[in-house]
Image (tube, rainbow, N blue to C red; front, side):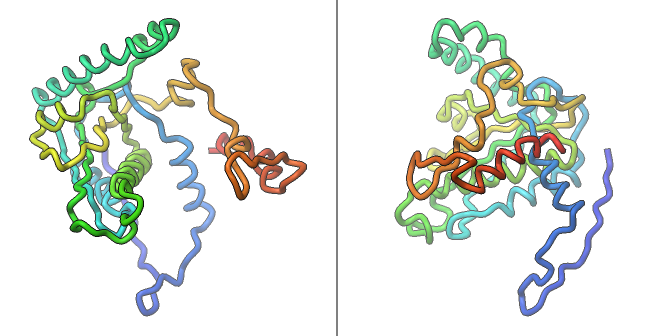
Length: 256
């Protein structure tokens, strides 16, 4: 599968971008990508991901924001089927353990869910966080010590959105024992596995997240999640124009 990427020069002046606006089609393309991103588990095609596509996606991940510009991430690409089988074995063990953690009335539903595509997807990528990559003292990490891990999560999101824009599905497998995964992939203890991702072209994307469709949890109303000036200080549409606008835009994601 090939695609053509058109490059346009940035308008710059003394190291500054002067063209600060996206046109409507560019802006809508971003929103379309966000609202149509899905956690893919079972729709993967076996065909390979071309290097030129994967390179673009990895560049997008590498340009994520990071605390102190430390860029703590690495991208461990797993294509070997035997290695993927070993990771799948780790998942199976953790999956069985996890089932017993849920209330009894939810266990059968949990077991029925397809929660990974490790073997079906042509590529797996483990995104990590090297907490020492910029030394012991990092701008912005002096008081919130986990900012480096959050930075690697930003790389995950960038990769996910870029992949969706390329027509690739991505699934995040988080039901894994981190230490066993480190041992399997020869990741040093000081390097934290942040996300184990399954990546590949797919037959289709679902209209809604699978867990939402399965009735596991509903989408929470945005207006209930917006607080003003202090925690849990919510307002009604009659009290605040932003909440009024949020209610008016309730169908905005469906436009894409």
